[in-house]
Length: 81
Image (cartoon, rainbow, N blue to C red; front, side):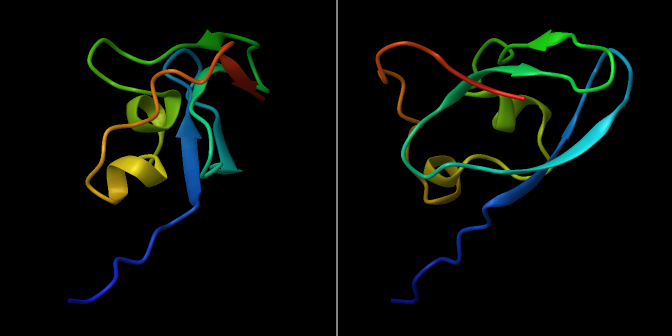
């Protein structure tokens, strides 16, 4: 069986202002909040999504790419941006 290549780079697209920012996704934590660097909007995952990468990124988070569920319980919510 061939191992899947996991992409760690994604482009977050702000739904408020349309600003795009390339980010490196962590492999060991979910990012629940993201501050847009342009308009300062605080992005949160859409209902049913596990993190901001799955909601607003061009590439889903690493666990989802591997066919797993995202890590829901990481203690306090992580923030990026």
